[in-house]
Image (tube, rainbow, N blue to C red; front, side, top):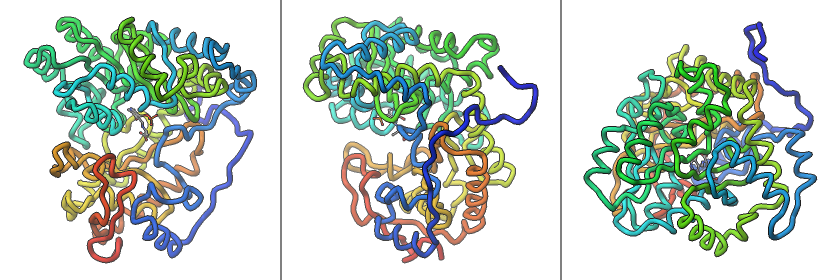
Length: 464
Ligand code: F0G
């Protein structure tokens, strides 16, 4: 029930707490240098507010913990699998439900089963692991966001949409080379922006016309339903569950990292209608993930997910979730910090190109900003820019479309005072922006380099 009062509160109380610890700026300067200026290489205990990811970092409910106690750990045919399968099928109405230990496992299994070198997979914007798994098959991961999706300051309701005209061209010009089309809801690499049902339906009919299956990368499907409910008048009176079903009705399959809107700490799935693909995918799954009724998960994980998918679709939860992100976005916007507008579903994305115009792409402005947020305030975010996406499959460098720092909110973890504190730190860093130096690589692996690369500040210090 929506309260008649205007303050939107956390729709839960807290039963179990985790202490977080302050460090000094001097300590953080040493820790950051020792981590090669790569926030991924910091120890979590040295981070005060950890917004590296919303993936697997959420707090579970008492109902999920209670579910875990009845986890059936049978190798084959466990009750827990059937509860998991029933929940996923109820929401997606897809035929074959294959559990995996996380999203990228579903991606690897799907792509390595159906792609061959030279194929093309269009998407609104591929996530880094999705792109890497496609490229590992010798295929091309093609991003086709609507043009407004690449203009951070522009406000539009569905900046996550796929460019339907570009998709139609791609399908028409590459017959036989596009085994599937993907749409990521919400569009994580593009600012956590939602995809409208009109756009999903448009993509669905194009795919049907060309006989190509459409898959959703549905990590944040529940957050996407809330934006549809708010912004697409036709769906204002529908429940998030009904909207989710309408979204999945456009799709022939889905990959999911259930570490997001599954509200659990681990898990994922591949769901699809094709009997032939499902059979081949299950064989592939057995090679590395396990038997098809557990897919690399414990029975108790499947239980936590079976409950979590529905909790993610709860209206009070979604109202609070989306508002808590918007709250930080409003605070930053009011104080002239450039962010991707409007705020997305799971994160605020700071536009580092706009904040640090003195830093060229090859000095990685968003990476430098993410390091500065840690140095000054113990906050950990993640770069989505030229470190993550600059290296091309042929080994050349090309600046990423945007230089963003994503501050992703774990689900049900931080409270409003954490966010107020965070706002203060970001405004402090914004005040130092002219003094922030860029970075250069001292070590850069070829694949998914952001996870393990090391850097040094171009000017000797990060903030001068
Ligand atoms: N697709 C999207 C849109 C994602 O955001 C992620 C993960 C994946 C696929 C892969 O799932 O991690 O379970 O293997 N995103 C996390 C993030 C890591 O921080 O955005 P995974």
